[in-house]
Length: 247
Image 1: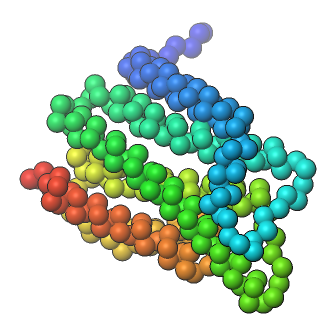
Image 2: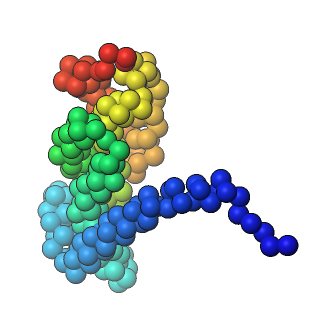
């Protein structure tokens, strides 16, 4: 006897299929933009690497190649860098466009106004990650000088760790806009968020501890901005975006 699909299951599939198709289309568009930007980053990797090396231009630091195959690694890292920076605002707009039919005009305006702030915070976090890595390199040089030890930095390792730190800090800096959006959409309550201060601080410390810099001062430099962003989120939603009466 042939198997039949339960009516409820078939109904659920028909109900959510248009949303899944739209998500697929938007994701494909994001992937396409990322791929194009990444190809450009791959092609022009030499200029990107030169620019990054200028940021790490610390007298006495020897940044070297340790393998002839590192040129490919540098090109891939450059592709990831350009692709991430270019695709981030596109990704935000795609999310907003997908949510628009389910939002009222007030909610849509609020979320739209958060996109420029979100992109600014991403760039701020990304930049902070780079400069923290530069600080780590400076400390490395000072310690090697104090111990009278020669120093060599692997260019691929330096660039990859810098990009990892910068990218994750850029993502972490999205907390204010993400939390504000959830509060505006009544997914979470302002008071509930305010009561999770200690948990937020602990998560910030754990998050920073998993990033490449391993010294305590770097941990502090990465954690403090995240904690400050949490407090900024509370202030922003208390005074600028006042909570709904129910919150």
